Length: 261
Image: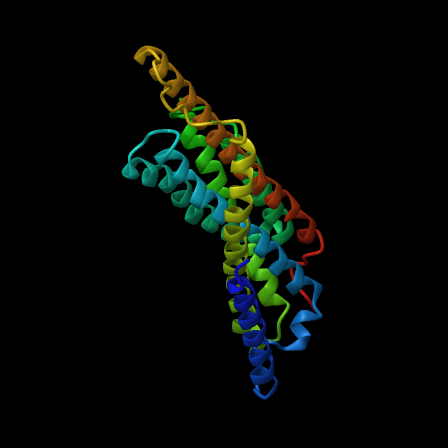
């Protein structure tokens, strides 16, 4: 076994230790304890981590699915992803406009519910999926991702003192990036193991001595269909995992507060 992963883990722990030591001597620390004693701040960042996990799953899997099992060009895959990402700013603006009227918690729960439903619907795509179903499902998902941006950030910032609001806002962004990083790492490792499970019974149909060409070609076609089905099922599991992450993210939202006094 390679020692490389252990070296990386050790290096990461060492960097975290150095960060803690440096911040302990800083007059305005990024790791201010009062923030991490606030349920509003902690729940907002935990929600953001799970949102990051779901977001990276969607952003990686949508174009990858288009370019592989769907047989689409890279441009088509990018346009599919654009349907999702284009709806994010629309959701963000809507969330900001509704924040004072509805409060942070209902908007965040609604956004996460849309992400959950949207990714579940995308996970049910067949190989022949097309518009308008394709666009509707991706827009629902992207709009949900956008809808949660403002209320989550608002709750985290409101949990901080006036002189630490920028720090609180930066932690929200860090949490999303952390969730995306963890999600991508988990997606890679879990995806490989799931692919091995799904293709365990498949063997490449090498031509047999004296085999008729038509029969060999038929076995190759059958193998290709089975392989595509296995990959499609893998992508469906990816989207289901993202849907579950968004659903779990609703739990910490329940203890978020609009304003901390």
